[in-house]
Length: 206
Image (cartoon, rainbow, N blue to C red):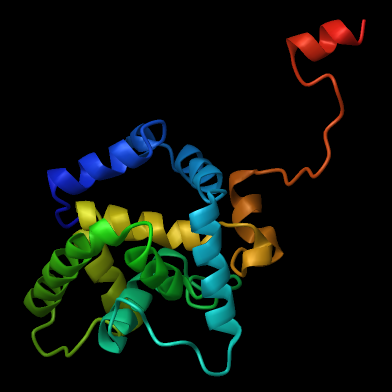
């Protein structure tokens, strides 16, 4: 995973101190489950709504932080993280618009991490495939090879995190069509709960 500065990591930890540890969790199921919890934050939900509207629009809005070329490259990587092989993926969910909104609002301090991170990915692409012009133009198998080459970098971890925030949110915000992401992690969308909810409720109901 291409390098995020220690300062960026410290900012993430300061902003969400109770969530910072989950980035280092080793189990995929737990990591994905905690993404759902973080995706409940209002600012993340607003970015998901923006992504949904952009993906559904016949004339998507202009990017606020990314330029079109950068957006195409990020979309290509995100589409390998959550591919469209078995249903809607990152591209259909408009994840790149979620990332653009994140970098212009609640994660604006991570813009430099994206700039340097993507520069590192482009350098790796040129090393591996000297005749290539862009990530988006690489054939699918070569995109996967590139992903494997960067998957232990801090930047890939960041991009994967943003991708899953954009994809695993409440389906009303666009992604996670038919709750495919929630089904993957075994998350139950229970809209009503029966008491007692805790010790004091139980005592009151005696």
